[in-house]
Image (cartoon, rainbow, N blue to C red; front, side, top):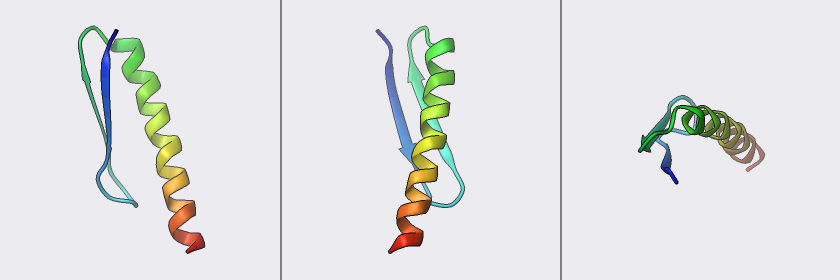
Length: 48
């Protein structure tokens, strides 16, 4: 099982995906998840 860390550095621009182990497929999924999280974070900030 791969360990994945998703760090949202700046709610506007940058998404950093860090992965350990054999994770080519998992990293792609993590990247998609990070994009979804960024969209949610932007929505949350705009609603406040």
